[in-house]
Length: 451
Ligand SMILES: Cc1cc2nc3c(=O)[nH]c(=O)nc-3n(C[C@H](O)[C@H](O)[C@H](O)COP(=O)(O)OP(=O)(O)OC[C@H]3O[C@@H](n4cnc5c(N)ncnc54)[C@H](O)[C@@H]3O)c2cc1C
Figure 1: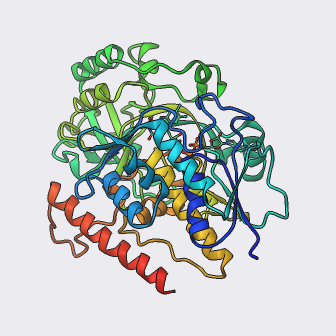
Figure 2: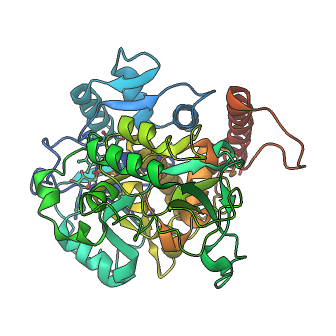
């Protein structure tokens, strides 16, 4: 009989991975440390516990990227989506669940699956050498002993304990009548052009109003166990910088030196810079703008920045306790650690963000591992699918130097019109991307079945 694949962590990603492996006819051991050892956020011993909100976000497959990801996961036989559908509660266009019913359904399905064995114990170091295929899906609150072992294996700069997410903007929503491309002092730097940043200028009055809004904006608090973790000190939220003095930001991330506003021919009073965030060049992050402002306050305040009045955010900023690896640097396209190919990673620890995205990466890791165990190589899903776009982002599309966790969004998909012609816009564009994705997913799933 094929030797079992070991999955560490019975959360959203690990449960989905174990299910996919078993469905492919391969045995699995699923290691979950709760209730023997807890985390700061989990409250139960149940598999796939939702630690906070009970929402899987939009379920609209034709207009929303996470809704599309739901549909792709359903078509791929996802246990997490099946349990969510069975335990949904009324939530408008969103998919929200009864969290206890959902977790119990996942656990019951896994317990009833003869090819899965659940072991309740912490894996407190690198897996034993005779585990030939392992999926590490231990999530944002990976136990300290395992985190330390991963840190040793990957290196200090490749494992983070806090995310520091600056808002990310769809480039095509920026007003280039006001914003312009320029690097400070026009320096090309290694590999640049001298025009690598998008700049949004502020005059004195605009800057003063912006600082006042940052200080007044509603903030989310750190949880007690987050505040007592020392790692976030190096990466201050912008509103904390603003509170340290009126000019702190103007001498920090908003410094205008080396820049000339083409509209005035002068150096502006302050500047917001945006840097390319993905290889496709469709997304730009606001440099140094990690923040604990609430989402509503972020959208309102950042849309007062000249050039960003109509900005569409691919994701808003945040700062949380979050264990994640530098996937673009460390993982290959089937989620294997390049330095030790028997180890795959899945879920939030790979630098995706959210319940659905974590489960989606678990689904792919499970399928890759099962294919390998049965002597096949499974090609990654096409980049035009939500599964493929998310996988492609974390394993190569994202810049490794500035890698931060990411939600699925349409900015990760290759554009429709590759000939330079203008394609559909707005809602029509999303629908066209979704139709293309579902058709391409179906042929990937069909192709696999035939292999
Ligand atoms: C406080 C908090 C709130 C969040 N809120 C939301 C939200 O509202 N909406 C959202 O979409 N996302 C949220 N997230 C982000 C993320 O989507 C969830 O954390 C999600 O559960 C990640 O799935 P996962 O499978 O990667 O990790 P988890 O679901 O956390 O699963 C990891 C599992 O591994 C186990 N484990 C850890 N270390 C070991 C070990 N050494 N040995 C054995 N088992 C181990 C853990 O007990 C856990 O069961 C939140 C994250 C945190 C930390």
